[in-house]
Every structure is written in structure tokens, then in C-alpha cells.
Length: 328
Image 1 (cartoon, rainbow, N blue to C red):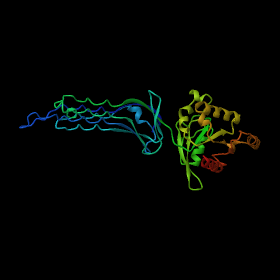
Image 2: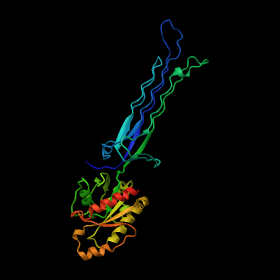
Image 3: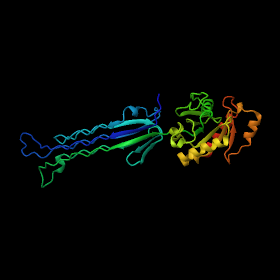
């Protein structure tokens, strides 16, 4: 299934029905009074979060939704039927924004969360509502309110405890495939990961956490270079970041600087999240290179040395991540 995480949608709530102008007309009842009924209320447009969805793909094929208008009022004080509301289902973690104002109007982070994004108009009053002691045969009526109409942006931000961040081919997909049941595409070339992947990691205590793997970042990602910037939104909710650095690369400190700078430029709050560093592919390093890397410091950020392929250091990393999550 194609992964879509950002769409624009036009929504229109139903207009209220028109009130009725009617007078009671019965045999043997001359001068029957006004009996026009009210118009029905227009239907709402509702956004509903569902755990059974994982993409906003459906909204790419249809992006215009309208609720039903209220029925007009009838004689004999009969109120018109209310218009049917419509419910648009979205994945859990979807943010709803108003395009015109830029305001975030809903953040649906739990299954079953809902928000009325456009309210239907109230029905117009029938002429029976306008009768007074001095106006016993009113011909006034209400036309009903207009339903709300707006263009909204739906942005999906995956819900994960841990985000894996690294340059292309740093070993993120291999790691998530080893520590969870996720099965991302893995190959020895950049940008193998084209969409975010989620995996559930079990820990020794019987608890678990969710980890997100996004496409690799490159220098200038915050300006739109590469693929990673398209998916950085998916680590905005994470509690801990694991920065993966390729141990076979030329300069791990320079790589770390590139990654942290891109995070900072995209969203400073991401860059401030608790971090752990995992230097990967240590199975491919000789002893001198490994010894040199072990002396490398990254300020106060803890460093782990792993080989996801060989399984070296992986459980220690998982335990450290779990411990860090518990502190947040």
C-alpha cells in the first residue's frame, strides 16, 4: 500500500433547511393559525482516528467532502429531517490544520479520538415561531444557516517512542529488522528506505516500545535535499533518538554534526530530545579502527558499538534505550 502522510481536503457541512410558511387548513376551522415547521439542521463533517488505518492514501483520490443539508420544514408544524453527518476516518496520529489560518485545530493521538471539523447550519424557523398576539398570521420564515466550509490539511505523524536517525546506508533498517518484527527493504545502497517503518521492540521485563525508522538524512535535508526531510515529522513525537553512525565511514564526528544540524534546522525541539549514539557495522572494522572509535567523544551523549548483522551490542543498546525511555 502506498504511504501518504500529507493531504489537503475541502469539507462542507450541510446548510440548515428552510422554515415553512403554512396555515392550518381544515374543514370547520376557519382562520386556522400558522403551522409552518422549522427546517432541519445540516449535517456535520467529523474527523475520526482509527487504529485500523496507516496512511492518508484515500484522500489523494477524493479530496472534496460534503455533509447533507437539512430538509425544509413542512406544514402541521413538522420539522424537516436533519441532514446526515459524514465521518472521515484517518490514522491515529493525524494532525488537522486550517489552511487559511494555519491553526492546528485537532491532534488525534488515540484510537477513537474525533473532532467536528465543520458544523452544520441550524434550520430556519417556520412561520409558527413568529406568531405573536399582534401578528397572528405571520409570513416570516427563516432560511436556515449556512454550514461551515473550510480547506484543511491532514498531516500524519507516526506515534513512536524511539526514532532512528542516520545518514543513508547507516544500518537503520537492518537494526529495526533485528530488534523487532518489522521487515523493511534492506540493500547495500543509499535510500533503500523510502517510507517510515514502525517496529515493536520487546524488552526483558515483558514491556515493549515502538521504534520508527525513517529514510536517511543528507546534508541540506532541511532544505528539501534527499528523502529524509519528507519524513522528519514522524520523529517529532518520539521520546528518545538513536543516532546511527556508520563505523566504516570516513569521519563519524562529522557525520554526527551533519545529522544534529539538520534536526536543529528542521525543528529545534527534535534536536533537544534525549539521544543515544550507536556506531554500526563494527564487524567490518579492524582492531585499530575500533579502538580509535572508542576514544571518540560526543559530549555527554552515551555511545554504543553494535553490529546488527552479527548481533553484537544490540541487546545492550535496547536495554539502554528502554532505561532512557523510563526517565522521560
